[in-house]
Image (cartoon, helix red, strand yellow):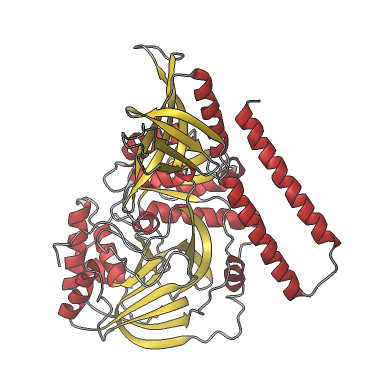
Length: 552
């Protein structure tokens, strides 16, 4: 065992001894009141945090490396690497003041020994130093960066390499991932995106993968039901919003099966990583802030995790699916028209559907009921208890409205995208335990277009008298129209080979659930389940880029 490794083990042993002494002291104390116990626990926690902070800032290694063309004094602690250029004194005898460079180890995903090798040489070679592969932030975007510590001493380099590797193993990061790739997403570029941008990062970070290329809708669900999830540290989806929603649905269903809980949603153990390869990628934008596969892959290899709320969609007591967002009315009908024109390029198909639906704009006669969200700043366990008691709460006070609505949206995440940089639901967040209900009442076509166009700007889309918003924990939509989507469209456009993901018998109404067409004939109940799933990413409040829609 080398000297730095002995230091690390001695530091661990001393920390364990301190904890044992603390436990012995606490065991000898007499029983006290709950309030006093809480105060003592808080004090002990503060002491432990201070000790851990001091422990993390202790210098583990110190050495001289060349960064660029200058020699630097490099210090390594358990949490960071810092370096200061070694400069001679000035002629006046005053030392030259320089700011040290700093790299947090939490941003480092790989460390390698640099060697000089001849062409065709696969192993061995003269040691040149250590290379640290890390990420740097540019706005919301994460970019790959490398720090080169040059030193020709093989022993010195190996000591630093071993110590850095051991420190990096202290971070909670995935080692083995189950990857699903949808080759049909958007421009059918998902396989290329994974091979060119994601696979090299996984290989560099020593992350093993088990890849499944999906062949049909529901393929990931069938695989998830059968595979042994305890072998993996996480699941990755390469595709659009539809693929993400299907995999999230599969993860929750599998968690319910494992827990033998068919009625209540169960939080999956494994986190889900999303590599954007779709046309809008609102879920990816909501947890990454950008539509960038490298940013998404870096969040995964660095182990950045974010708890996210989900919704369950059911009709007549039967579960339809789990998801993040849904639109009824204009949003559902425009998606249904777009699905009938799959042969068009995605941008033209979207514009055609919007224009066609605006031209035939009509309100939906329905009964809209919602359960206002209870404001809570509680912990995760309180959110979970609230979620579990949601169905049995005898004091639920629903608010019911009857009328004509052009569009009804229910969104448990902000739904950021390049088209709506602040999101379709900017007043909600990823894990606040509620969803945003946006009900757009009947109005003129010109006023409705003004409402739509304001999603491209920073604000103002809800400052209309015909638009109402509510923070809700549950929503029920009961259509009252006698003419459904299938009857209306059969007269307008004839038969179509495209079928929705779920089809109901009789009069059916189109729903846009996470970008997937779902036709449901009866009322739909949507319930919010706080922090039901874990995604790789961060909480963001605005997407980086904007794209304007020329059709409106």
